[in-house]
Image (tube, rainbow, N blue to C red):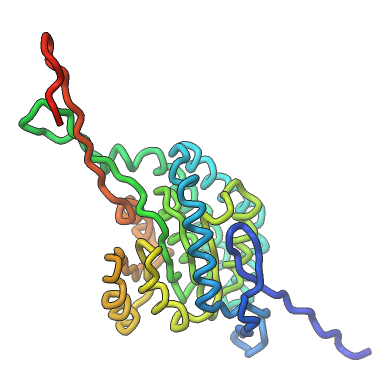
Length: 294
């Protein structure tokens, strides 16, 4: 009997809580170390990116308006589901070139990192906010508020931990995001989208695309409804392009070159760097008199 031909999985996109195919109809086939094709993966277009930004913007109001405690519960729930699917993620990592030990370590750390940021959801406001001394009869508060839609270009060297490490602080702080996953190691990205879809994350909060950085990065930089960009890489050309093109709406650019397996790759500042500080003045009513004006 002839050897059976394996039916390769088709990894679609994740936009607005659904799994559409790319509107361009294009796909590519990443390969393992032996040159064997791993899967059929959608090659995202600029139109896919625009659709994802629309979904992220629509979800922003509801997500940022949730209580910090509820966002914490949801991030923890993502970690719970990922824990139950460890074997599947380990298998995908091994197929993409990791050893069994490396795959186990990466999946475990991704789960722990979700729990870490779940713990920060209802605490970062107190740490990064302040009550300010003022000379007038006012209370003066400075508090962090989410920026909006964040575009993320995930780490190209890892499949899961870089992706999770970029997504978790973005959504912990009440932002929504559009992520372009690793080009050569995309398998865990859409499988992680399946985890998100099974959790309590509302559609549109996290949108995951697959494809090539060079096709999307310039469009992300000039898109007027993207408020910030996280770039996980070290390409000087990409960084210069982002810095030059993003001034159109004064996007905040955050370049991360972390070793995502290290402990210092998780910290409070990955949340607060995507926050805007809003200051409120509140008059103090004088005893026996009327409240002073603003």
